[in-house]
Length: 185
Length: 178
Image (cartoon, rainbow over all chains, first blue to last red):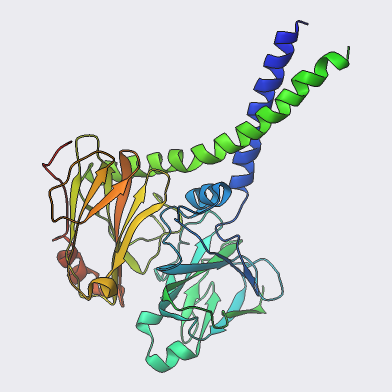
């Protein structure tokens, strides 16, 4: 084989393998791949020009048009406090306080990153609907069937994940919500 | 025989690194292009499309917030700068953010920053002239998205907010190129 062909084959294979590996790594990455706080993971430089190339690509795929940290902080988890995957057939108690911002909301997504279908059309629980006292100490149940108090429907999905948005965050951070599995069928 | 492959394999390794970085640079631009095209399908280019509140049926952009009302204007600056005017709404939080073609935030301002006053800015590419006196945001490339987020205390208030937010405008600025 002529040397030129060898070089051409290796360059082409390198480009394809390198590019393919990058696409695969980005697709299998997470929306939040930053600092770990309990079961939660954050990302600190969404949308900023300083974001590393990999972070920018991961956010474009998993959370396009996310706000920078000055405006909002995002925390996500796909596991409970004991590290078990969140299962939409189970019931979970989620409890916390004010995570350190002007407003916060907790949204439940399916594995595909979209809202989960449920008969009640409830997709999130937010501080805007809470009394000032409740914002400092709140509790909800994530479960497939309606529950008393604040209820976040799981829609019975096999797997789900949670995203906590904190708007106009202050410096530092209070404790993030605890996620305790109550029961499973 | 094997020795003849040493050079090509070394070059192939370098090509792999180049391919890795090229893909990482390309991914945000491709995703942004797809997103702007999808939004443009709903409301056209250089004008705000006021989306309904998201539900499980929304499949345009991943991880939408059900607590926010979104209005988005896909930007195309090829014909010149744009003027964006955001009208205040009776909500605890609203903001305007402008994302460039790489998905970077070129501008963000919220109602606390403005103390509840309207936002009026021009968005222009490099070398495009904007009349004096208009605050200007420069972005690389011709494409991007301007996005208004409005936080709802109660989804039942959406009809009122929906009327108020439609006073916001995204329109071509007639200044043209310098």
